[in-house]
Structures are given as structure tokens and as C-alpha cells.
Image 1 (cartoon, one colour):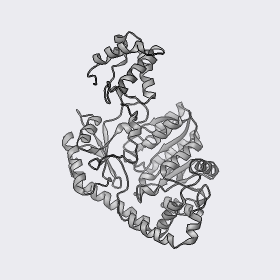
Image 2: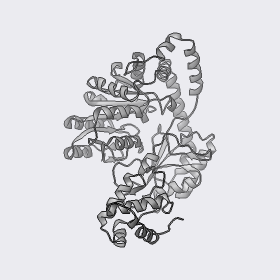
Image 3: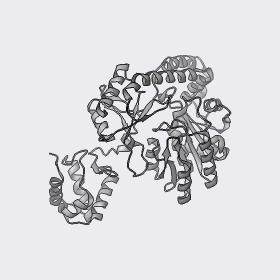
Image 4: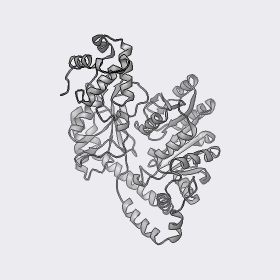
Length: 466
């Protein structure tokens, strides 16, 4: 049976600590671990503050701090700055890792407004036709069943260059490397450019996939201030003056989750700062592929140090796992080696389909399909958000909504989950241990089955808040 308050927990800990081995902090950590395993301390239970528990069990606050840190490394608790330390439960799923699952295996009654994905459409019909054509193309089938170069087949790379091209920015196909989706591309880049202990700068609120990768690879993330126009150049400059920063990761167009677009002059300023401090730029264009009028990438202003990541996941089909990275000539062999070490080569079959779709103009049709579907769905629910402070972009599939007092973002998340709807809170996007702003990300791109389900979910959200 679970405990209900600090006093219950403390009395059990006092009784169980002498039976555990190790130093004082190890005994305390083991005692709490056993309480979690036996379901005495359950998920969501808030542990006593360090000083209070230390006074009650007659140890130093440092002992409690070390015990809590050990439990956090074990994945049994998580610390929320300003709130305290909470039990995760037996599963050991960390909050930020849980928030980054690309697919959540829930019952059909759960409606997921937490993830940005492509809205299903004609891509299944196009895929069926592509397979029929491939079945009659023996030459293509022959090279698709063999090993290909690390960087990808040249005609696949040429298609990637066409996918990344915009306005006067025309990437050289020889600088394009094929990867299995944007996340794989990011992994290969980090493996190539950074090592455990290196410092990486990014927006204070950033892509959860980056946070997960850096945690796994031992890379230190440092947050840069953001405003209504995105990354603040002076904050980046100050950070570089005080820390040895190896690279900058950012999303200049339709930033995730804030949806900001960095203006041209600020892009030029950021590029100059990176040149001044000799740091590499890792630019994520994946969220922006639906935005045709977006400004030129940072890589246009500092091509010698810029890497651009893009994929077909948001606009075409997430399941194809097709991505492209644009790198300086000096890094082609190094990044190719990382691709080889992770999967040997990007999957030729899916890249062949993507190549044909790009060359035939089908990806442009699918892009327009996404733009139309996003516009339709957002139009259905935008009136429900009247009176709330939120941000979005015409081609973004999500709203970034501030939670007004007295509500907390986590409370809104819990209340919606009770009603079978999932959302993301700012905590999933925060870099470091700063207090997460009370914002939620609400996406309209889930395959709801019908418009009414989406409308009902947003109506529940606004009713709770208002």
C-alpha cells in the first residue's frame, strides 16, 4: 500500500536503512529504491525536500542530495527545478525521454495531440504505384539490393539537393549525404563533430531529440536566450565568450516548439558570431520544409562551417525515413564514416522512392496536401483559442499555448490525459535545469479519424484553462 505523506515515508526509511549496506547516502538510496520496487512509493509521489528529510533521519543535507542524485541516475526519480524530486515508478522512464517517443502504443481511445507528424493522404496511393513501377524495373531492383556508397547513390544525392534548394541557395549534390531520417542525420553529425564532454549551444527551448542524443553521448548542452524572433545573437556571443563552444544547433525557420522564424539580418549576425568564435553551425530545416517563403538558411551566410539537416518526415511520409544532410566539402568523408558506422548506408529502397517522387513533382503535391490539411485543421479550432496567449505559424502543425495562472502546464497535461488526450509541455523542450515556462504544445496532425475528435480535444483543453 502506498504512503500518503512525508511522515509515513520517513518512518519506513528510518526502519529500513539499517538493513541496507554501503555508505549513508547509498543506504538511503537503496531504502527508497526498495520502497519504489514494493509500490510503497508510487509514481508521482514527491520526496521530502533535502533539508527536511536530513533533519528527520539525522544525516546531512549533502547525504540526501547524493542519494537523490543516485536515484535520478538510476532512472527512479526526476528533479523538477523549483518543484522538487518526484518518483518515476518502476519503469524508470525519464520524463524527457518519454516525451520524445515517435510512436506511443496506446489504446485506440487515446488521441495524441503531443506529436508533430505528417497528416496521412495520397502518399499510400503513390507508394503502391511506385512499387508497381519498381517491380518492372530490373535494373533498379538490381542496384537497390546491393551495398551502395556511404554517402548514397549519386542520383539520390541529386534529388536531395533539389529537396534542399530554395531561392538562390542551390546545394551541390556532392555535398549531400543520404541518411535514414533527420534524427539519424543528427546522430551522425554529433558523432563526427563532438565528443563526450564537448559543449553544444542551442535554443533554451529545443528539439527533444537533440536533448536525448546529447544525454546518451555525454555532450553538454547550453541554452541560448530566445525572444519573439528566435535565437538572441547577443546571448550566443556571451555564451561563446564564457564557454568553449564546439557547435551551435538551431532551427531558424518554424522553430520547435516556439514556431519563431529568425529574420534575415539576425541570421547574418548569428553567422558572423559563429565565424568570430570558430564554431560549427548545425541547422535543422526539417520543420520548415512546408514554408516556401522562409529566409535563406544560415548556411548561405557561412557555408564553410554550416551543416543543414532536412527530411521528408513532416511533409511527405514519416515512415519512409528519408533524410538529407548538407555538409562542407571538408567534412564529407568524416560524416560518411559515421553513416557507415551506424547503418553502413541509408536504405536504398526508400531513397529510390523519394528520388522518383522528387523528380516527378509528387513531393510538391504532397507538400501542398500538408499545407491544406494543416490550414483546415487549425481553422477548425483556432476560434476556441480566443482569449489565450499562443503562438503559431501558418505552416506549423502545432500551437504553442501559454497556460495562465493558477494552472500549471503539468496539471493541464494530467487533466487532458484523464480525458484520453495527450499534449506536450515545455518541460520536454527545456535545456538544462532552468524553470520550464508554463506552455503546452498542441498539435493538429494526429490521425484523428474525423474532425470532431480534434475539435473535442481542443474544446476540453480550453474549457479547463478558461
